[in-house]
Amino acid sequence: DAGVTQSPTHLIKTRGQQVTLRCSPKSGHDTVSWYQQALGQGPQFIFQYYEEEERQRGNFPDRFSGHQFPNYSSELNVNALLLGDSALYLCASSLGGRGLDGYTFGSGTRLTVV
Amino acid sequence: DAKTTQPPSMDCAEGRAANLPCNHSTISGNEYVYWYRQIHSQGPQYIIHGLKNNETNEMASLIITEDRKSSTLILPHATLRDTAVYYCTHSGTGNQFYFGTGTSLTVIP
Image (cartoon, rainbow over all chains, first blue to last red; front, side):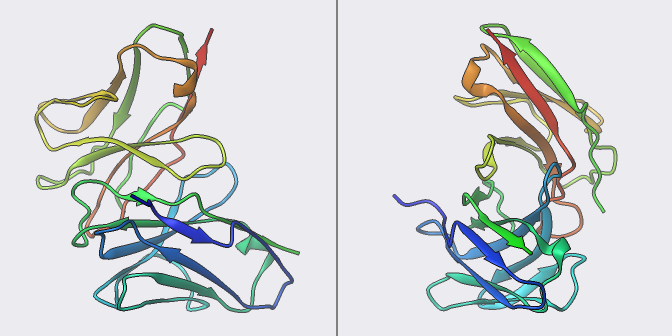
């Protein structure tokens, strides 16, 4: 049973560019949450998607946007990249939104902005 | 925001029990306490969760105080593979988890 799959694993972008990260949730899960983890810090919540809608959002600017597809997979888009956007981006899936049985995280996409 | 407080680092001898404390004084009555761990360069891994009763699974035990303002994760027989950053969290007012900086546990041979 595949867990959460994220692509790509590593990415280097230039300031001002745009990036799209992808996530396939664990089989049977319908909710996807995205987190940003800077070096030495804990993951910070970006937003959550459920039933193809953004259900909740953390304290991130509008440059961060997302989408959920009918097959529950999700994309995270970041526009006008800043050096400070360099981080590990984690996708977590769960069932039914509240994730009462805990989230399953992917291994993340390491984004470096130069 | 939901806040948790954990010691930044701890050491534990291999084979001994590792007891990791967490304060979560802002937790409300219907929120679960969750513990995750993150091994270097991987995504966080779910360990255990509980509401008010103590819980045990194949990985760990969770002890929650009666007032629910703190909890302790117990790894009964720590191994070198348990070296990781351990996060205590709860869901706050919504569905997201708020992670602090966690406790870096080092298991010493």
